[in-house]
Image (cartoon, rainbow, N blue to C red; front, side, top):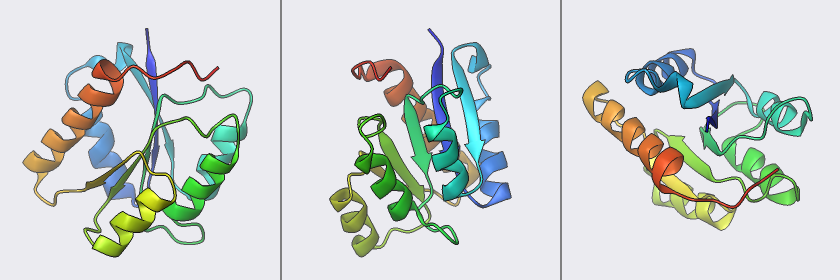
Length: 140
């Protein structure tokens, strides 16, 4: 069964790095990754009936125009979307950001490591847990 990840980040370098890590083990047959480079684009994709609902949203916190908290609020406010796991994937380790994310319904909060090896390990752990170990209810 193919699983679907929605990766939301405004930084093209972070997007490319995350995509490279997610594709490192050749698991593209097991997963599909859709990219949104803004909060608005993410919500458009999530609300589009022609697009499959993701099994997981990896959401950057610090984005211009519509930050991750606003996207998270919109996801949690819609019946069709509210049960999708949302992992905040961000450079901020600030306690205030962590608390706010959980208060708004984040499923998990991961600080992006700056070291590539550590980043790769974090992404592989996220993918392994959410795509293979976790058993969510059917969304659609």
